[in-house]
Structures are given as structure tokens and as C-alpha cells.
Length: 353
Image 1 (spheres, one colour):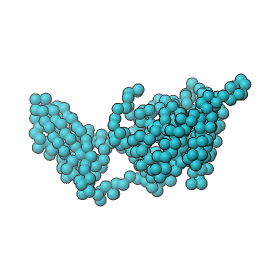
Image 2: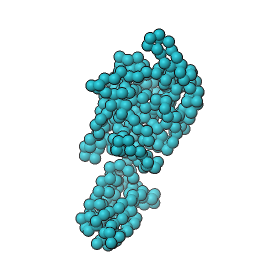
Image 3: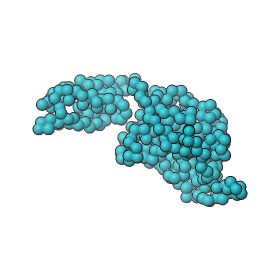
Image 4: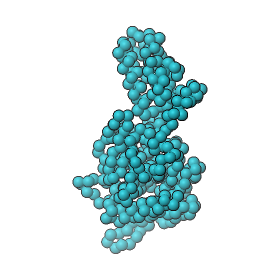
């Protein structure tokens, strides 16, 4: 059976996946425990940055090398290297500054779709705005950042999973939109019970480890409210424009104002307000019924000093069994045309800014 020193020697030769420096030089082997009777080795490893494929690759390397040398089972815990340890490798870290989507020089427009509370149709707006922008000939990506309530793949009728090319994930393309979602990485209907920091790392990997290619717009479906994940997304983006979704009801508009306040607090601009479920219009009589009240979206837009981008009536999309996307409105439908107009408004607004 392996000794503690042998484990340290074997694992110490492996590189920190971010620094590309052996763990024995970074001080990355924090703890080693051995249960000889069970031939079990437990290792705690500190690396420069948690989460994503690099951590998973290192985990596989550790398990493989220890099992090859006599361990029957292996347990691994990861932690981040302390600041004082990272300081020694500051030059290496600076050379590996995040490029691509999160680079300040990237011309992609980030548009975050936010709401103060759940149930107002935020994800429906995110999906249809992305599809409408694609219909205008734009190159569009969509990040389902609503980690606890991911629904975008189901709404768009996506059945397949992303493929992997080298160390990058290839987003699934549907309706002309490239899509990535937490739904692709958990078993069907399994609850997500991770803590906030790990969720933040997963969101970071959506930006840094996905092969997006050239994009004009990246739409982000944020979690409702102003919690950790929404704040993480706001702080990691170099710049972002936000659309606030509300219903006409005064309470929904009131809590939506908090999401707008967060955007301003994190130095991001508000592109506008979309009022969803504005009214129900009878196909038989043409009469409009304001089921959830009236005026909440306009009042919120006025409070945030931003335009009201559109008012969306209650309606179900036409379903096509051959191209099933249960929440996407076609360009021939009333709501599809409203979304196309909102997309044109967004294009004009982002040009001006």
C-alpha cells in the first residue's frame, strides 16, 4: 500500500491545470490520508482556479496515477490556493488572462434578461429575443444562466447534448441560436444543490470553455431576483446591457426595480423594460382583457428612466410537430412579429450606445 510520502511524490509531479506548474512547487498538496485496511487514499488539493474542465482533467489524472500505484479507491477534495501562494505566480497568471468572450476588446453585445421575481416569463422573453435577433441575420448565443430553474432547452425543443472538441464545449444550435445550459450537465429533472461559489465557477466556464465562435449578441437568461448567481454574472462581464421583464401587476413591477438597481450598481446600463402578459385578446371578439392589471411596465420604465421596449399579450405559440419548439413564436404569429420589432429596437439601441 502507498505511503503518505509516496502519494505526495506521485501527485506532486502533476501540474496545476491553470498555472502549468507542478503541484509540489505550488504547495498544492494540502493533505493526504490513507486507510490501509481499505486501501483508500484521500487527497486534498489546492489549485489556482476551481471549476470547469481543467479541474476535472486533474481529478482524473490523480485517480489514475494513484490506482496504478496500488490504491484501490481514491477520494479527492479541491480548494483554491491562498492569495499569498498565487502571488508567487503572478506573472504566469497575467499571461493567462481570460480572452475570448470576456475580453474587453471583444465586440459582442451582452444582453442580460432579468426580473425581480420568478413566473413573469423572463426565460420566454430571452428565448424569443434570441430567436428574433437570429431572424434579423445576427449571430446569436444564449446562456441559460438561471442555474436553479434552467428551462431554455425544453422551451426550444432541444433534445441533443453539446459535443466536446478538444478542451472546448460546442454549444447546441437551434433556430439559428447557439445555446448552452446547466440542463446539459445534470441528469434529467435532477435538482441542483450546489452552493453559490461552485455555481459561479460553472457560469464562468460557460464563457471561457465554450466554443462560441463569432457572435454579435450573447443573451443571458439570469436567475430571478438579485442573488449570488445574478451578481456573479454582472461582475464577471466587461460590460452588459440589461432588459428587465415584468408583468403589468404593481407588485411585479415593484420588485423588478431591484433588478434594475443591481444593473446600475454594477455599472451596467439598462436597455429597456418588456411587459409580459399585458393583456388577453379574444380571437373571436378582438376585445382585450387586462387580466393582471395595467400600466406596471410603463411605470417601471419611467422609474428606471428607460424605454418600454414592448408589451406582450397572453398567447400560446403554434406548435409544429416536425420542428417542435414549444415556447418559440414564429415570425407569422402576432407575438413573433412583436418580438421581431423588439429585436429591431434592441439592434438600434445597441448601435446608438
